[in-house]
Image 1 (cartoon, rainbow over the protein chains, first blue to last red):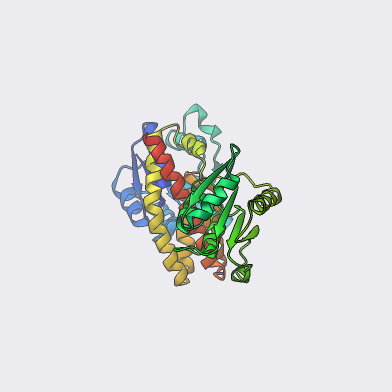
Image 2 (cartoon, rainbow over the protein chains, first blue to last red):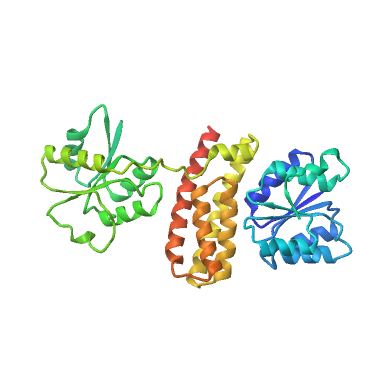
Length: 132
Length: 242
């Protein structure tokens, strides 16, 4: 199951339709609190997290996810519309596995998702996202 | 084929202009008031607008101001028809008009004025569509149903966001402006709506820099681009539904 945590409902719907088409189960959260609740209580295997979410922001969510024993092993792909180096650096330090800039290239997203969910796959080392 | 919109509440003036200008190469569209003129110009920007200075509903100044605020209609040359040689109402408005025609004018005068305006017209940049339908369809992998769903979601969301933004601008709430503009920018990006994305980005950048001196104007521009986008999305939805 993939959790998409993004307050942009249009973007979130585009991503979830794409991932569902690829056969993934998808849950969505539109704010930080919802995202944390789902990550803690549902069998989430991967999180796609918008770093600019309201209610504490994506960075806070990332901090909590990586700081909790319950969720710290779930890989996180951070997405953001503004490639702010300090934010990226912070996401990297906090342990985000990958970073993709908006508008998200779905091919790059697929590669990143495949690599993080299935690290042993032969294509796993060719992901085109900007890795953290 | 040229298209000229003639906006005058006096039917006989519209008829005179139509009779003078209409030809197989020149189509005349008539509007009896300012609102109708704006609506015609927004549907398909004409080559020129011949506009009566005084009309019920919206004055010529108001019509021109509305045209200039919308990127889709901003470049339309406007010929103002006045009763007396009166340019005063335009002073200080910084609204550009291409020419004035003083009633009563002869058919020859009308033809000459229009010819000069069309000749003087700067090479019009191609009208940028409010969103790129082809990019959107590519993004949704050809799924028309999903494209329509995203368009409908945006149509619902954008009103909420514009109200939030308007309030934030009035309250000079920098954090909220940045947040909401960022969100609108993201949603517009999904729809490949370049002009709205840029207008939202401008607001976001202003808020981030803490400089709200231009925020009310930037908000009006954003509102105009969103209005154009709404019209384009509604057309897109109607096309997909038929």
